[in-house]
Image (cartoon, one colour):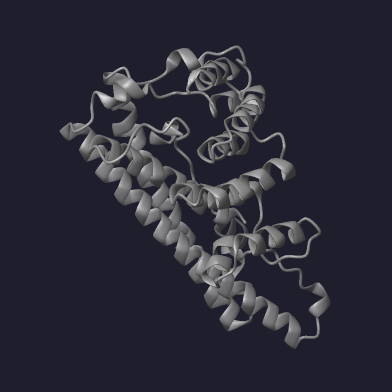
Length: 305
């Protein structure tokens, strides 16, 4: 599940880099729901397997398990290095760029929730108008190129890590079964909802799978962030009704999550249901960590014909 979460995080980062690039080339308009803060957010990949099992590798008698675990530990190190390289660009280039051009939204950062770090996650820490002034500059183009490259590299290495993790899991299951210890097997959901699309399943099939998971009866990862990510993919592909269904479900399963209410509002408005869209946005404003900005946007939304 942690791998799926980190892959989704990298997708969000890459989506922002592409959004900014496309805006700078006149291929996209400003998206008020895009989390531009990801431009300079830093993160890290935890090396759980390395920390827990490196020292005990030599004591594993099963050659296949020892080999797979060693490969997984090495792959985990490569992923960690890729994250460090991505973070280095943000710390050494992006933050300096933001400071030099006054792009940081410092006024929003110093809100009334001074002891709550999470209050920074939903406020605008990037002044988009000032960022836009740098569109097409050699400096920004160079930064975007580096970010795009390293985020893509990290995602690719995460794919390999996920593959090795799955192989190790299957090998461990096989060993337990061969030794008559099937009762010790507890599988963790690790399949992606997007896999259902590849199998030709409908949006209703996906929703049913998510509902099944609420009762522990699913092999798919159905955390709220995974549902949001798939819904966002639908939204970008202009499959508005499919996106609406997933965001609606997510607000039912996780009613205190502001992001789904925000995008549910956008879907409803795109579907011509402005009043319902405004109601959803009111809920978002109520839950937002930056209610002042959210309420201003709500008033603007109400004024739009």
